[in-house]
Image (cartoon, rainbow, N blue to C red):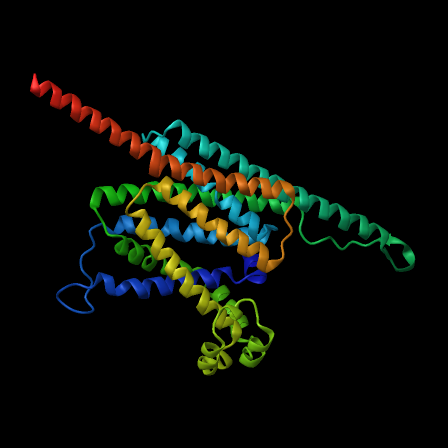
Length: 358
């Protein structure tokens, strides 16, 4: 896990999300007896503890994958594989799916594998070019090949892929478990939001030193110059009104930019995770993963534009299959199947009425 602390701030970002979500959802659990007294949860705490542990593990694994040569676009695409795992988990629990639903998930799987292969192929190609270049660079008068290895390799990608797949299997299990909890106890999505994050916080204690290290590095970053941002029309801040930037100047120019970006990330993630929990309380686990795949499409496009990733034809094909299959599943689940069910109910009502007339 040390490599993660050196290469990214994923652990700190995840911890900030959990703290912020816990504080935000805390007032929703107030009891009528007092403003700061928690009401008794509908779900036993031991079940919330299981969900919290799985939630923590999924986030840690997803962050850890970045340490193994996994690019942001392929990270997003591979996480879309969760729909497959969730459907398998649902089948094992006795659920049944239509042929078109199964077909959409099969297409999604093929798209994920195509994208993964394309990214792995590009990593191997870059690795071979780096090795060839290192052969041409000799070490001093002895003419020995430089021993410096290129950064990243296909083996790193394979490890990162395994970490992501493990995370998706765990996410599928958690999705099925949460669905059962909602159906059994009728819990509210805010209760899931609160206890799922509150009970995860103690699990961060063993990595507290890494969190302090990452926070210190962010706190040491320089603050932003508002006038320069307005002048250069920065892509991120240029979307807003310059007058708003000037109004927030005291905060922006006083706060280290690392902590400023962390705060913005945390607030936007709070809106996202709240929506996911609300959706989970109203629909099936598979539908949730499909909807999240559509959300990932937006993230995928923004990631490609903002970070300048180059996409091969295979990568574009794979991503199109992934998100196209999500649309197909949405059509089958939200439109065709409900229409078919409605027609059957109407037909049954007509037949029942005809028998009564006789």
